[in-house]
Structure formats: structure tokens, C-alpha cells
Image (cartoon, rainbow, N blue to C red; front, side, top):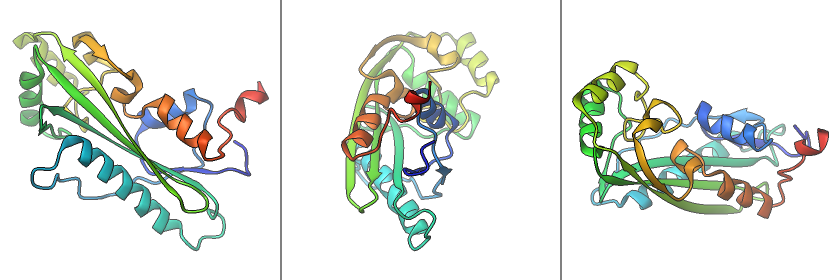
Length: 206
């Protein structure tokens, strides 16, 4: 990691860390922000993803404000929302929630929205919302039961992890795959590069 440029990831998601590391970017600090993620009344899934990613980035920015060591850091936050139409699916914590999500997703298309927000060292705020269309095959009762038993759904938006076992369920995907994993890598690296972050710094070390 280049000590002259620090990236704070306002998330504790190992999937987002892995994706950044795939691009050769090692976050200097992980700062998961514990915020109320309840959608507002009639809030569109896209708007929710944008709002939550912005709130997480601002919360992390406020948390390090005045700290000399972290002064001048880039702060990146993301939030992923899975929706069927305008219906926002939960980040499932209970098996009943997960079962309901899987039955709803079975045999139909849904949208995955990820909002990303970058706060630059000079305090500028940059946003993007990326969307991907995903279609699941029709799931049998046995497939749903086995997936629930795996526990892989826990804490995941829409109750599935596309990079895991649920990849077997995806019949069609239009758009960014890494967006569905939790961080649209192309857009995130372009956002960083556009604000002066040397995305390829670690590449040159070989």
C-alpha cells in the first residue's frame, strides 16, 4: 500500500475487501458504520442504495475528522439493495426471511442496485448507483431447503450470495457481476482514479 494515499472502506464486508484486493487496492482501514438501514416510506430501491452509501461515507468521514493520521484519506462506502419491482428485499437474518426471499426470486428477474460514495481528501463527495438485472431459474423445494441449510444467505441482501452456492441459480445476468457481489469494481476504480487515487500503484511492484 502506498503510504501517501490512504483508503478507508466504510464497510466490514469481506466481499468488498476481496474485490478491492483483486484490483490491487488494499484498504488502510475498515470502518463499518452501524446505521439504520430501514427504507423510508415509498423509497425507491435505487434511492435507498444511494442514500445509505452516502450516509455511511459521511459517518466515516465525521468519525475521523480531526485525526491527524487519517487526514487526507479517501473514504469509500457502498450499499447493495436487491429488489423485485419496487419491493425491497431484506438483508436476511432469519431463516423465515430468507425462505420468503428465495420463493419470491424463484423463476423471475430482479434488480440489484449498489450505491457507491467516495469522499475525497479535500471533502468532495462523489456518487454513483449501478444496476444489474438478474434472473433466477425456478427453484425446487429441495434446492431452497438445501440453500437455507447452508446458512450462506445470512446477512445477504435478497438472501443470497451470487459468488457462492447461489451462483447455480443464476439463469441470466445483465450488467456488472461484481455489482451483485457488493462492489461494482469498474465504477469504483474509475471513481477513485478520477479523483487522483493511483489505482495501479501496487501493480508496479510486480
